[in-house]
Length: 433
Image (cartoon, rainbow, N blue to C red; front, side):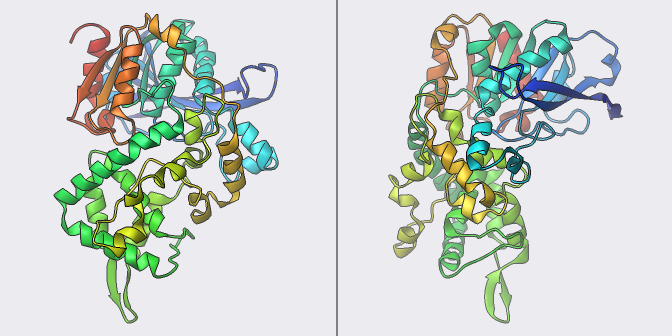
């Protein structure tokens, strides 16, 4: 059923689509996709080109905007926008601890989840596009993992794109997950050093919290086991434009005095459990390393293995000496499936995905080298989530791609910079900049 409704300055329409689970078997099982169409109120009856937005992740549904927030206002000046919940997210046949048991045992769940990578998302878009545009190509805006999907789109179905705009989402075309994380941990350490330089008082605060966690089991109100490694993973905040400040404000109210002595405050625990829980986006944890699988090598819990190559991230060693505690971030580890009640039932499924070797290629270097689609990409200097060197190498491999390399924004530049970022990138696709 299609529903249309209004918010300030926009008209929204709910869109529902049925697509194959496996596009290689179009007559087989199907899943349901959801997307929200958005058009400016004063353009609702006009024939406009389409822009489809692919959210970062993997595992996150599209933004739920109110009105013309962030970049959306700029897009609505000339486009009818489709905010797609990628398969397994939002309202698009969600994949989580509640729904996945419908597939059967862990092996069946893992087999099912192999259909939730960028290649399937692109095929979904190409199934949807003719129904909305009458066959005309559309413009794609891909944020972070959405940019990974855009690169797959350019590799497999460039005829569907009038232009592509990527923000913080140019992937390496051939790096194994191990290569991705070997590049990531030094970047994360630089972000932590910058945070402590800004807030030197947080060095002692972080050490004190870590010592408390090493001294005994701490279970948060939602059942999450807060280990020292879990606490360190709060460093994922440091990749955002306001992340360092958010981390500082979190650490400053960690403890309260109680009759039994100092304890982690309720306010701290509440905020931490909301930051660490994957209840709202479990697919991120399940397929995060699988998005790098291409070369018939297992990902095999890559981030956990590679972390061991960087002993400075070992909390016990740091506390035994006088080193600052290093935070981590943008990596998934097997212990998360033990700590998080939203992930615990999916541990065996995650192990099976980590062991798979049958991942299909996601990118086609030959087609990218012959690309004719106007493409522009924002590459953020020292991006914590996506390696800048990897992104620039890929930019050189895509014919005609124009880059905007900037240190004005962090990875969330399309949100923080809003209309200005999108305007700059659209101009680059039109040779206006």
